[in-house]
Image 1 (spheres, rainbow, N blue to C red):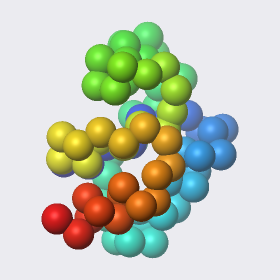
Image 2 (image 1 turned 90 degrees about the vertical axis):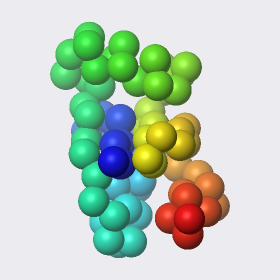
Image 3 (image 1 turned 45 degrees about the horizontal axis):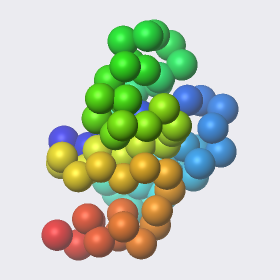
Length: 75
């Protein structure tokens, strides 16, 4: 399963979701601005308070790291 932890106003989040859309990758979005539970989940998953965070089948990518995302897609 692929999840994107993001907010609606984060430029990096928007870029990440557009990139995944372009690559044809289906994902679930977790908006961390909506509830404390989601904010705690992203911290637990990544150790970070920042977004975007990509959980690609258990592999965590913090920020929009195109090279790392492409590596994960190739697996």
